[in-house]
Image 1 (cartoon, rainbow, N blue to C red):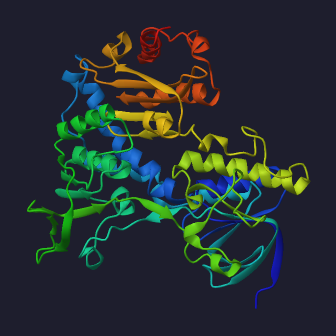
Image 2 (tube, rainbow, N blue to C red):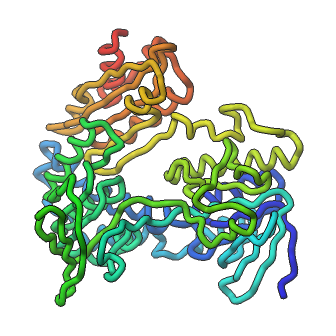
Length: 473
C-alpha cells in the first residue's frame, strides 16, 4: 500500500497549461508535483498547434512566393508532401518528450507518469505507468489541467468505423488521395486546406456555414481561398450515416438526397469538451459537466481546487490556457503567503481578466483570420453602445506583399468611451497585426491616442490609419 506524501501543489495534466501552472508555483517558492499519463507537453506540442501549423506553413509560403512577379517564375507549383511531413515530425520531436521532461526537471518540478484522480479533499491518487501507486496530499491546491477531448457527433455508423480525429490527421504519415472533412470549425477548416495543398482531393461537409463565429466578410475570403485550393465545400449540409464499404472506402451519405461522398479517410472535427471524466470529481460532490471557476481558476465551493485551460471550459485556446495557468499559479502563491484574500483586482497578476472581452485568436488558413475582443454582435448582445468601421485591406504594404492581395479589416468601437472593443483582420499573414490590436483592447487605449500610433510605411499595418480615418479621426 502506497504511503501518503504531502506536497504544496498537485497539478494533473502536463501539457503546456499544466507546465505553466507548475512553473509559476515553483517560482513562488512552493513545491509541485506534475502528473501526466501521456507525453509531457500535451496536445498542443504533439497533435494540435505545432503539427497543424507545420502542415499549413509550407503551403502558405509557396503561395506567397507565387503571388509576386519575379519569385512566381522561380518556384515549382506543388509541395513536396514527404518533406512537409518530415518537417512536421521535427516540430513534434518525433512524438518523444525527452526535452520537455528535461525542462520539467530543471525547473524543480517533480514529474509522475500515470493516471490521477481525486479521492477526497486535497487528496490525489495516481496509478503510475510503472505499475506503482502514489497517494498525494496537497497542502495548498490541486490544479486540473487535463485539457479537452473531441466531441463526436451523433452520426449513425460512426462508432462502427475507424476514422480520423484531429490527432490522427496531424500525425498522419501519408497523404490520402481523397479526404472528407466533417465539420466547419477552425480545426476542420485548417486541416482541409493543409491536406488539399499536400495533394488530397478534399470535400468539407458542415451542417452550418464555415467558421460561423467570424464576420461574413472574413468567412467569404476564407471560402474563396479553400475553393482556390480545390476544396469542395458542402455547407449547410447534414449527413444521415457513414460506413466503410468492402473496399475500405468511407461513404458519407448526405441528407435530403445530397448523394454520397466517397473518400479514403474521414476527418471528424466537430468540437471539443473539457476532459473531466474519470477524475473523481463525484467523490468530492462535483459534477464534471457543471464545473465553474472564478477569475483565479478556483472551482466554486472548493477553496483548494482549481481548473485551468481547456479543463476550465472557458476559452479553448492554448495561449489563453497558459495565461490562465500563470494567473492561477500567481493567485495560489499569494494565498499561500497570506497576501491575497478573496478575489484579486481586475487586471492584476492573479486575475484572468483578459478572458472577458480580450481574447486573441487566429485561424491559420490562407488567408488568415486574426481577431481579438468582442465581435460586433457580441458587443450588441451585451448591451454595449457600439459602432463598427471596416474596409478592404488595400494599402501600399499589402500591394507590395502580393500582386493581388485580398484582405479585410474591422474595428468594433465603444461609443461611450471611444475605445476599441474588438478587431478582426483577414488576409495573408495578418496574424502579425493582431498583437497591436490586443494591446489596444487590453489597454483600453482611447482612439484619439491610438491616432498617434503611426504605422510604418509601407507596411500592411497602414490599414490601422485607414480605419481610423474612415471612423472620422
